[in-house]
Length: 133
Image (cartoon, rainbow, N blue to C red; front, side, top):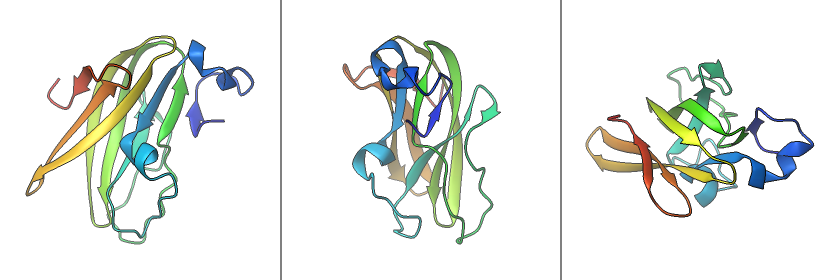
């Protein structure tokens, strides 16, 4: 069972019928730890529904926000949180999910307090949404 899903627990097993959204944090570090000082990319809201913890600005925040979601195909607005121990940034991205599609939420540090966050199709690498959209 994924960390978040808007489909039934029994049918979510067959991901070929649904859109899977996964963050690059989940893909690269499945055994991550909240004190490893590495950035995390978390799913906070999907279509304005809270699916994860919205953080306080504190070092001792334990993260249990999902990094993977199985969704019914359709149009979604997803709020992602890029988090370091003492800093965080929110990004709202819109996408159209298709059956059998895997979407990766990616992030890249580009300079002092500058960050890019985007969604891309995992199979083709096509950018589906960016923070600028």
